[in-house]
Length: 294
Image 1 (tube, rainbow, N blue to C red):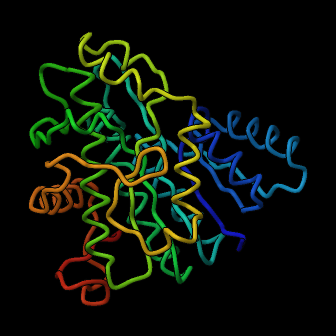
Image 2 (cartoon, helix red, strand yellow):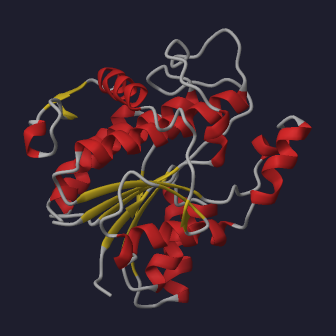
C-alpha cells in the first residue's frame, strides 16, 4: 500500500484519535489537529510508543476561529507540497448555547463552517496529490436536520439536538456539492456515519429517538474503521458524493440529496467565510463558480 500523507481534524479523543492510531499503524504519515497542544503531544507519544516507526505530527487548531483556521492552513501549505487525504472529523455538541469567535452558533460554526473554510483553503495542496480524498464525518442524526438560514448566528431559543442535526446535514450537503464541483479533478468527497460514539447529546434525545439511535452507538475504534476505509481503500478511489455507515454505502436523507439546497448553502457559506472565486470551475466541472480564499 502506498504511504499517504493524511490530515485529520479532532485528534483529541474518540473517532479522531482512533483513526490516527489506525492510519499510523498502517504506515501512513499522519497529521492531526487538536484544540490543545498538550492533547496532541500526548497522542503522538501514545502512537509512537505503540508503533516506534510511526510518522505522526500534531497541530493546534480551533475550528471555532477563522483566524486559527487560516493560520494553520497557511502553515500546512508551506510545510507540505501535497496532502493525499483530508478527514474532517472534529465535532462539538454543547448542551448550552455558545458561539464561535466569529459570532456563529457553535455547532454550526465549528462542526460545519470551520471545516468548510479549512477544506477550501487546502484544495490547492490536495490537488497537488494527483489523486486525493476528502472524508467528512457526518451522522445518522442528519435525518433529523434541516437548514435554517436564520439560525447561523444563533437564535433566541437553542435546541442542542436540532443544532447538532443541522450541522451534520450541512456537512453532507457540503460534501455532495464538493463532489459535483470537483468532478473533473481527481479529488473525491464522501461522508460517513461513525456509528455514534456515546456522548451526552444522545442521552438527551426524547426517549423514542434515543431508542432509535441506541443500536447504532459504537466504540470509537468501530467508527474509525469506516474513516480508514474511505481514506485508503483502493476500491473506493473513484467513489464520490456518497454516504457510508459500517463500511458500506448508506442512504442519506432526501434533504441531503437536495442539490438546490446544497448550492445555496455553499454560496451562503462562502460569503460567511469571506472567500471568493479563485479557480474557474471550468477546470473542475460544468458549473460556474469556484470558492477559495481571498
